[in-house]
Amino acid sequence: MTPIAVRSPLWSLLLAAPLLAGATPGPVAPAPPPAREASTPDAAPVADPALLGENLENAAPFVQPFDLDATRRMAVQVMVEGQGPFSFLVDTGAERTVIARELADRLDLGRSEKLRMATIGTSTALAPSFRIASLNMTDLSLTPFDAPAFAGRHIGAAGLIGVDMLEDRRLLIDFRSEKIDILPSRRHARRLIRDRDAIVVTARNSAGRLILSDARIDGRRIDVVVDTGAQSSVGNPALMKLIASRRQNSTAFYPAVLGAITGEDVPAMRTSIKTIEIEGININDLPISFADSKAFEALGLDERPALLLGMDSLSLFDRVEIDFPNKRVVLDMPSGAHRETGRRYADAGWMRGT
Image (tube, rainbow, N blue to C red):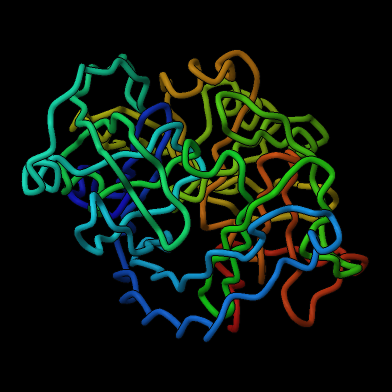
C-alpha cells in the first residue's frame, strides 16, 4: 500500500489483507516521484478481439485510465452505493474487496460481522466489516457483499478491488499508456497479447490468487503470487533460506520492519536477489523483504520457497495480461527488447523509457 509511516530507517513495507492486499516499501532516498496524470480513456470501448466469434455476450471491456501512485500501484475510480467516485487500488493479491473505515463511516454503511483473516503479520487478525449494497466501475459491479474495513491511512486509498470482483475477468494492464482494461473471459479464450516475444506463464489458483510455478532461483523452482497491490516483493522464510544457502543475494541481509494493515510492526529481513527467472526471462537485483507471514500459510505456501511478486517487477514489462478463468499470465516484452536476446532487467538499473 502507499507508504504511510516509515518504521525502519532503511525500508518500510505495507501489506494489506485479507490474506494479501499489497506491499509497499519506503526507500530512504531519493523520494519517490509524484504520480503521473492518468491518460485519457478511449472515446468508446472496443470489442475484445480474443473473444470475437466465441458467442460471449457483453464482451465490451471496461476501460479506465489508472494513476500510478508514488508506490507504482494502480488506483481506479469506483462508485460505492451510487456515491463517489473514490480511488480504489486494483489488487490481484487480495481475496476480498476492502473499504477504508473512514469511507464506510462517511457513507453510513451498516456494520456486519467481524472477519478473521491472515495479513502480512505474524498473527491472524479479526477485522470489522461493512455491508455494501453496490460497488461499481462502469459496467463492472459487485453486489451485495461484506467488505473488511481498515484505516485509510494504512490502505493508502479509499479501498481495494480484490479478486472477488475479478475472478471471472481478465486484466490487460498497459504501463505505457497507464490504462487498464477489465474484460469478461471464459475458459479457452485466446490471449490478448500475442506478440512473438510475449511470455506466457501458466498458473494455478489458490483462494482466487494466481500462482506461477515456472519460476526459478539458481535452478530451484519457486512459487510466485502475482500481486498488483504490492509495490515491492515479499518472500517467505523458506525462500530466504534458499537464497542464503546458495548465496543468491547480491547485497547483505539487513533488518527491516513491515507494517501490516492492522498497524502491527512485523520484523523482517531485506536484501536483493541476484536473479529470478520467469519462463526464461531473468530479472536481476530484485529487492525482497522476508517475513514469517500468515499470508503464506493461508495460501499453503509456508513450507516451500514462495514470493509475492509486486509492481516493481511487473512494471518492467510494457503490458501484463492476467486471465483468472484461464489461469494464465502474459508478459509483453518492452519495446526494443527481444526474448531470444536473453536480456536481463535490473530493478535499479532499467525502467520503462529510461
